Image 1 (cartoon, rainbow, N blue to C red):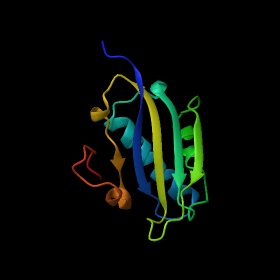
Image 2: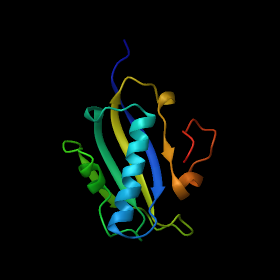
Image 3: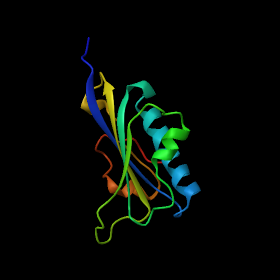
Image 4: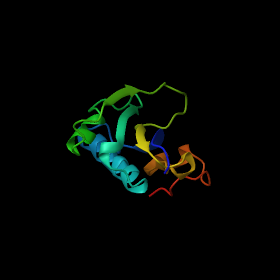
Length: 128
């Protein structure tokens, strides 16, 4: 039997606008994709760290997780560095999960305009 270890799962997406609705919609879509691609049970999620580019400030992305029922999962939000030519309206996630999966089995997800943040062919799930 494989031991349970803590693994990181990465993901990113973009919001269509700096509105509460757009931020929550994009975040929910990303979280659902990560859970589905990795066959996660929310009780195994140790913590989630969200970052946004500084042009997104209408809502905390973590609100989407709470709306999905993630009441006991520790959540944290922060802003990204302001890098020249960075992707605008970007929401990034680092999800820490307790799992028996090996690192090579983890599926990272990059959706919408964030698909270009990670090169294809590196074991990531195809973007939508």
